[in-house]
Image 1 (cartoon, rainbow, N blue to C red):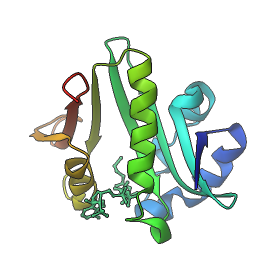
Image 2 (cartoon, helix red, strand yellow):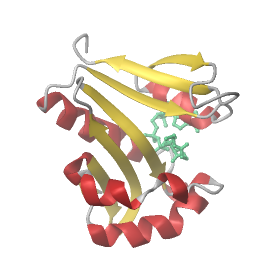
Image 3 (cartoon, rainbow, N blue to C red):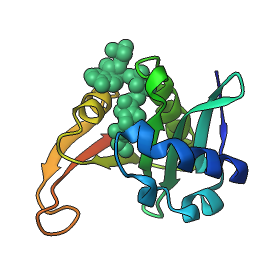
Length: 146
Ligand SMILES: CC(C)(COP(=O)(O)OP(=O)(O)OC[C@H]1O[C@@H](n2cnc3c(N)ncnc32)[C@H](O)[C@@H]1OP(=O)(O)O)[C@@H](O)C(=O)NCCC(=O)NCCS
């Protein structure tokens, strides 16, 4: 498997599989802006030329490596693809001076909760994080303390 920066050509492929990989409508979160503007902060993992996972992230001016969206092909879950993408993005964020990492997920996404816990993220349920009645798990990890 190989990790590399996303290309414009990857956009069509990811948009065509994202709802299936997520088990529901998610394509709105994969706004074209991310594919056009994030550069190599957006990553894919390929196996034998086939995209099996992607991560859309960016580093904020305040030094936070923020993961907006991550998705792994159902057939490739629990094979370390998500961990690999997070490690690559974290290394990129660190090299650009990031001090912390952050990601969010919706309540009920137990797989994402366990995944972030396994990667050493703190978890907090924040009421109304995404607007009234829209609670979110907020994951955070300081980089300075390892
Ligand atoms: C969450 C997700 C990204 C994890 O990707 P993955 O490639 O399967 O994760 P990894 O194989 O790197 O897992 C690393 C560790 O996280 C934990 N983990 C990952 N998925 C888990 C799950 N479903 N249940 C429990 N623990 C899990 C495990 O400790 C795992 O290590 P192990 O397999 O050696 O036990 C993937 O399931 C996915 O794409 N889900 C749908 C989209 C989504 O929810 N994205 C997150 C919100 S942006």
